Image (cartoon, rainbow, N blue to C red):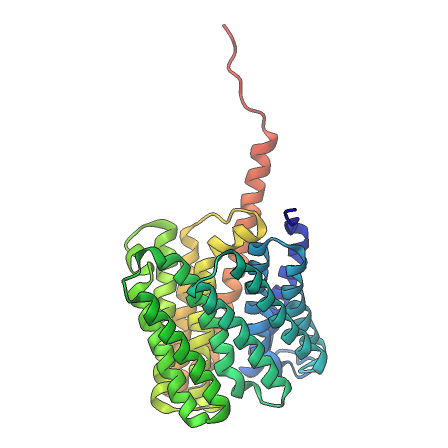
Length: 375
């Protein structure tokens, strides 16, 4: 018997929890930037990273995979990550919130196990690696490591997941050595993340090399290198992907060239090159494709999509170059505020586009067709 698919009304609360994690994480960013906004009773700044990476990105990834599997139990994975993020907002880095985030990663691995039975391959292997990296990050967090110390695992979750999805699209045009190169880069990335927990100095260099190898594969083998010459949505997606790869390459250079870092301006630059420059670019680029599949609602392409993408990259350049490299506090602070506005602008634009599309569809449905008179 075929499993019953997940109804859209069941997906919406989970998506709302991921959105709550995003907004809370952005508010925590404003607190970290030193803006005069009201401070909550809980230490929201301490969970800024987990909220953004696991509460928001993790919930989106798990929800999309649950929809792809098409079984109701799979919705437990994004539900746990969303609930864990809500608990982090309400209670800070408490044990229940961290446990729920870890449980979400275990359930995501089970989803991939079911998907593996349908279509095994290196692309899905990379996504499984991402889910296991999520699990490793939460396990180490529970064991007492600080958030800066688990950043390589959080980065591996994001990078391996996205690289696996890009491999699914590129497999028809891959060169003969493409899959072997991909697996070698994935292995180096995972080995580097593992080594950072055991030998931080050596691990950071190896992790940086793994990032660079992964970026090199993405740039050479991804179809975005060709579709950037197209028009409309394919060109927009390609622009978002290629600019994101550029930021990830810079992060790899910082890790490979300068070693481990858990604080200061280099930490701020490295962290946001990965999770803003790369990860948010991927979300901006994939949203017009992924959201319609998750919500069963069209997200029409429009040139407005370039505005938040351009704002994100411009303000991130100011934050990293002026704030972190040149040491100008105003550049760091206002670049960070611009990052927040770019993300909020994109979310607001997506919501407005979905509402307009829904209204247009409703008007089309209620207006009866004009039947020509018979003469």
